[in-house]
Amino acid sequence: MRYIKLLFIVFGASSLWGEPYEGQIPAESVLLFSVHGGNYVVMADLSGETLWRNKEKLRHPQMVEPLDNGELLIGDVTGAIRMDVAGKVVSRRPVPDKAENCLATILPNGNLLTGLEGPGKLIEVNAQNEVVHELQLRPTSDKVHGQFRYPTVSAEGTYLVPLLASKTFHEYNRDGDILWELTGLEQVTYGLRMANGHTLLCSQGRIQEYNSEHKLIWEFDLVADGKLPKTPVINCVPLPGGNLLCSLYQGDDEKPDLIEIDSSKQVVHQWTFPQHKRVAHISIHPRSQPFVAKALADTD
Figure 1 (cartoon, rainbow, N blue to C red):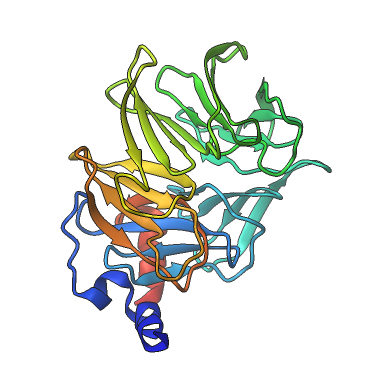
Figure 2 (figure 1 turned 30 degrees about the vertical axis):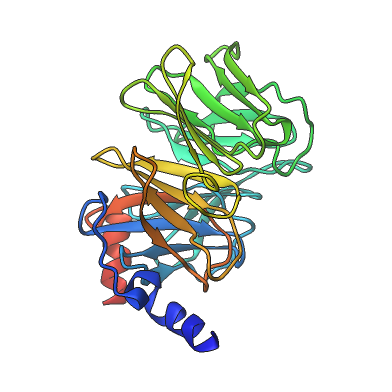
C-alpha cells in the first residue's frame, strides 16, 4: 500500500491506473483548485499531474480565479489576495477584526466582489478600492467561520448565496430582498445559475438541479448513485457536453477528490490527489489564459 501511495504522488491517479481522460473537459485545459490541508493553490493537468503550486502559505484558501493581468485572485480567511506567478502575495484587501472571507471574484463590470463572514455581507469594490455596494445577507447564524460559502452572481444580477452555518440557500436581488429560500441543506456550499436558467446546488453528499420554477428536477447522491462516501460537494463546473466536474471535500488518500458525472448519474472519471489533502474550490481554464500561460512557461 505504501508503494501504491508513492506512485499516486508521483504520477497522479489517472497515470497510475492507465486510464486516459475521456470526459468532456476541453483538451489542453488545466484544473485550478484550493487545498485546505496545506493552505495552498494547485494547478494540475487532466492526468492529475501537478503543474504549479504557490510558495507563500495562505490561510484556508477558498475561491480561486486567474486574472487577465497574469495574477491570481484568491479569497482566504484574511481577505481578497492577489498573487503573482511566482506564488508571492502582491496585495491583500484585508477583512476587519472578528470577520473572515471565502470569496474573491471579478464581476462583469470589472469590480471585485468579496465577503465578510461574521457581519454577513457581500462587498463590491471598484478599481480605486472604494466600496460601491454592500449586500446584507440574512443568515440565522452569526458564526464567523463557515457563515457562508462561494456566492455567485447570476446573469440577471441576483446573488446566489449558500448560508453554510444556517443550512440555507438564499437568492437575493441587489436591494437585499430574498427572492428564493431553501432550508435544511446540510453543508450547503455552492449555488450556480446555469445557462439554461436552472440552478445547481451543492451540499452534503448531494448535487441538485432546480428548474426556473424552483422545482427539483435532478439529483445526484454520492452514496446511492456514485457508490462513494458521503462528504460535502464543494462546487461543480458545468462542462460543454452537459457533464459536471465536482469537488469532494474529504481527506482519504484512496478516495476521489474530483469526479466527473453525466446526466445519467454515471461517474465518467475521477481524480485522487493523496498529496493534496482536502481539495476545495475547483475551476477549469485554458492554457492560453494569461496567468496559466505564465505559470506553465515558468515551469518549462
